[in-house]
Length: 120
Image 1 (tube, rainbow, N blue to C red):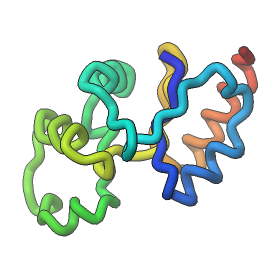
Image 2: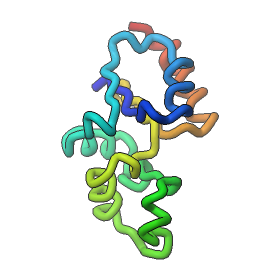
Image 3: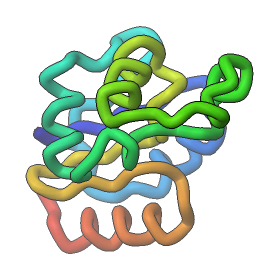
């Protein structure tokens, strides 16, 4: 899979997308209007090693629902991500067997470097 999962209303996602080289062959998925499928999330899980790694604790719903005070399981993380797009840490860049999750500066730099080295 060559895909970038992002939110078009997120300024950070837009800035990161503008920095990414060689993305012509990637499928851009705006997760609010085109929610990810269970199969796509399963593939992300395989690459990331856990659903927790894909989960965003910055989501407003995370605080509103009091989830920080609960012991969430991998299944909980999976179900929450599938339930609402805001629970996915974004953007998620999937390039074959490589995955880059979130907007941490080091993650973005690693994604840019990876994409520069792996031209279309």
